Length: 323
Image (cartoon, rainbow, N blue to C red; front, side):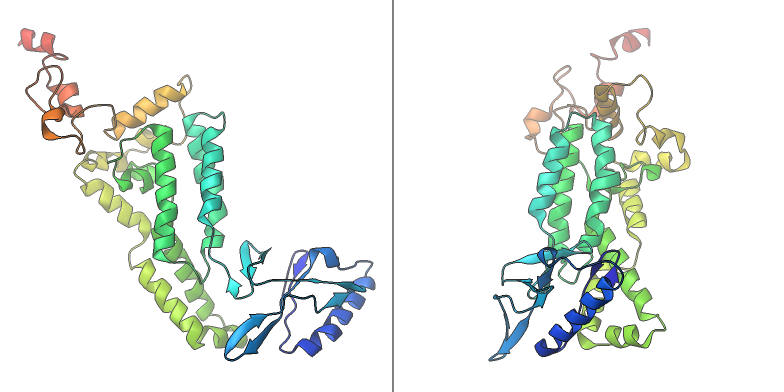
């Protein structure tokens, strides 16, 4: 198997590897190229009492030099995946956490940090998360890190609905991709498309019991409804977000979420997003005790955003006098 300048050699028996490596070495030498042993790795697994045991000592040579063998806890990167002695490894959430922290510390405006997240960081994760070891719990944990990052950047309340973050901007949300709903849906479509291929080898692989179990599990994770529609419905029917339904029919009302208007500072954008999503600093939030939710101005109603903007006598005293 080859991709660009990377290639993988597969053999069923260890004794056949030496001849294959010699043929590969001759093939590249005839074309003025060579294989670099220092950038190559070998993976040899033997069966012992029903278990697979990796060979930790170098067993293969190319160009007269030993090829490093993969040990039990080691891995190598190939086409976006970390591959070890027992197959493709699960994605590492520690790496995601470090990337999010670096973006948060970068000297960027809030909208620039969100753009890096949406356009570069999350797309970098998508291929690596589409592997046989992915689980719903792993994707949920990754989403939790991403939502925490968004709330830090925009100074959102902790009770902010997930739909505000994950719904598409054209529906009134922030358009941050949801890994838990999006990755299984995309992964299943890719597997389903492979199952429809006419190549007999691919069809035989897809029909194997192991792959069939994988497809069934990913199918259950994916669900039947496209994630985009699920988040749209959740946003437009939520108690705190139903007012954003009107944004679906007006692209101009959401365009500024993707591109900060000229003359706006980062603080201006944060305040505008907070106003749109009911995240301005008021005490009438669900996690405050009931007595602590009373308006600090009139002490008569819960201090919600709608009360401050439309009903509090402190902010609407002149209107009351005029009436």
